[in-house]
Image (tube, rainbow, N blue to C red; front, side):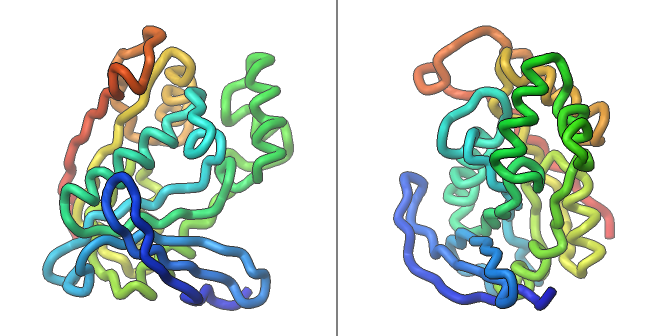
Length: 224
């Protein structure tokens, strides 16, 4: 497979502020990814950039599903980047941890029957996580980003970035959006995938828009 290329960019006004939307594409497969960039990120070597690698989740990001924490993480990351005045969010187009939308729906059906999120993927013949985070390091490189403060609960993202030459100097936790529909899902990610989840114990049914979403944002320095 050839290396991903930067192919397009434009201004994107959002409720969190104005971002520069940058499009990336593999020339052979035409597989697409995108990034939202705010502010001047050219001096990341001396001033690490707040960054998020957000894997595509149609159900959470656009359809407001409560089965996961993805939509809440997306909004919180964009808000924090806006508050910082600079940063990058890579929209990593690997729906369903890399299995695609239709297989994700099939996995949801198996979860309705009692399997957890890992067991459902494996029952369909997939690994627990099929995503390739290496492409995100290539996107950071194309954007000129060398050092990041990464918004994530997933240690695998940190390891992948560092192996690819992106210096993750700090992990900023993103524990947000827990509710009674996704507590078991979050526990499975922590117990079986090593995600650094801090439960907020907000499991009662509530209106997310009226009452807001609990966010536990921790920071963890990472030694080089």
